[in-house]
Length: 504
Image (cartoon, rainbow, N blue to C red; front, top):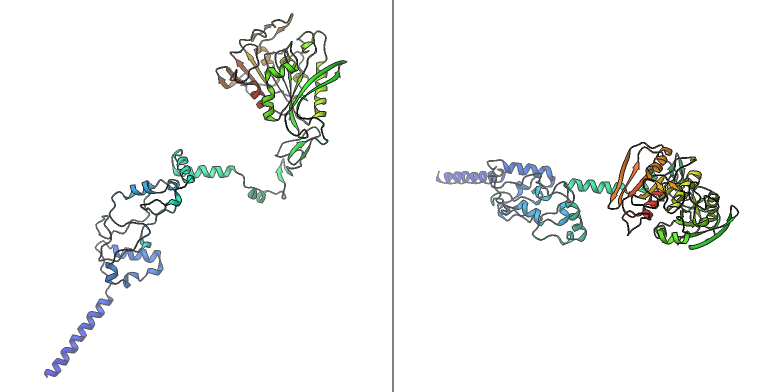
């Protein structure tokens, strides 16, 4: 019996041990009071199928071992962790999406190993979190580290930070970059969207070759007029020209008289079509003196504009009401102008859509007279200190006008009156002269000031068929305003105005 009892006891003891072993290997790990262990396992299984059984396979020794290095995410207590990230992130992190680093919060809270919501590290008795269980760091921000990544410490990154300071929100930076990118046309996209074959673009309802189309030369709507051809996207003369850059003096017969003028040609190809400005001197002067007086060549050279300085008969011009002796003898200055345009166009390649006139004093009167009588040939007119009476002004189209005059002018008074030193000539007031231009160009009574400085101010009439503008100077007297003597520079403003107003 004792033997049987011993055997039975041994069997019972063995069965108990077997039951204990089976029980140890089949029971799941304890679940914390807040259920965080179960949540961790579920989140891990959802994020990465390769770790479905990782918790069940982890031995106690592995659970007690220190957690692995999770790519720079420090599990030690860091009460100022969010501030550290903002301070230590590389400069280009400021431009990350979608808000500054010090306001970014992780999408998933870190596992609370202690179960009390604190920031302590994982408990040694629980499973060590894998790197893939850590909260996602925003893609544009690298993991925080104590040492900034040298690869991000670049001059470009610093520039981005400076740019970002000018924008109130990081999203504004993205919008600004998108706007800048949209301002740059994507040729490949345009080609794919265009119904035109390769090498042509849609212009004016048809496909145009900007390299050779005289109606769209270099750009849609840039028309080569007057027999010019389009070569290599530039309007050029069909036949070679014999002129040369620099100053050339020319003599010719016009109206039965020997006449003369000077040409200034900028240093550029004489075969490329260029604008031309005819600049008429005041009474008592000539073309060479007026060239030195206005210094118009300096700005014209920068703009590649041809300038012509004509010589008036008896140092005067026949603007009908003024001035002697040209007006007294009825000199054919309109015919002389036509001859000059033809002569200059024979020597140099002139763009017939960009022929302009300007002048000073009696020369300004002559320029306006030409604009009235040659509006089909003159694109726009400007003048300084020489009002016009518009007697029998015959416009075939609206005429762009820019006019300068000083209230301190004693030779040609701003309010009108006798032309000082010129017997028998009474000049109209600036208001009278400009109102006539306003009426001719169909403007309303309303005006708008567009420039003001210590010299005076400039304004334009509204609702015009062609622009009409006046610059009223309150300094300078009977003079041609130009920098540095004056802040209002007539040379710059005239050439800007001319460039904006070619013939239709």
